[in-house]
Amino acid sequence: MQSRREELLAIYETYLGSDSIEKPKFNVVLFGFQEAWRAQDYPKIVAVGDRLSKDFLLRWREAQAYYAMALARVGREKLRLT
Image (tube, rainbow, N blue to C red; front, top):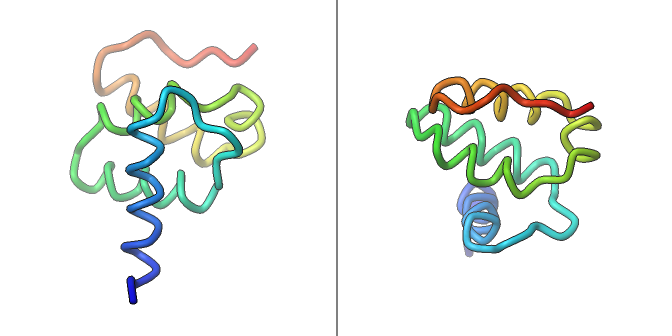
């Protein structure tokens, strides 16, 4: 049986491999962002963040913050949600 951590990471990896993310789960996104941040893998955060809807990012400010910081780290334009 997979641990909860492995389960969340497996789902997060599916987000990386898809063109768009239908109904993303906040706990999966947040956990994946936290793990990628610890590993300094900012492009992985950006890759998933690019696939999230603006509504998702507006609702979940913590995910929005990780995404915005990762964009800055990879030298991309700042996040605009308005």
